Image 1 (cartoon, rainbow, N blue to C red):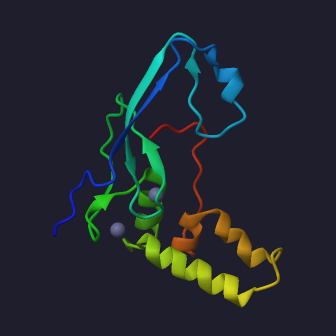
Image 2 (cartoon, helix red, strand yellow):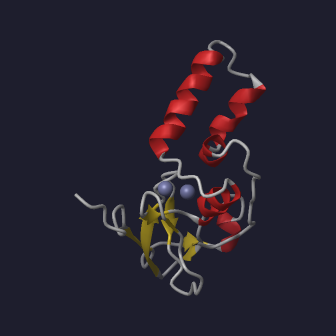
Length: 141
Ligand SMILES: [Zn+2]
Ligand SMILES: [Zn+2]
């Protein structure tokens, strides 16, 4: 069966019509968090990245194309697209990332503070071990 490009797509609705809501100051300390003021309703489509499994809220005002991995023919987030291009177009499905994480955990069993295990906090770094890490502060997808 062919995989559809919208596989993993979803929809989120947060109804703050009867709530004090969350101001920008309330969520300023949480990266990627969205402020939803009181008395409003927030609605967005969302997609899952096939490489890192991140759930991405889609910005309806975005004009740039969204990335599709040409090898697994699925949506990938901007961060994974940057890493994929930097790695020469490699497609690293999430199962391969889990395999690498498992190998590292076995290799460093009982050494939870080992520096090589820091990569477990970031699946993208685990997928593309030689790729540079790019962070866009406040970047909307
Ligand atoms: Zn991703
Ligand atoms: Zn892929």
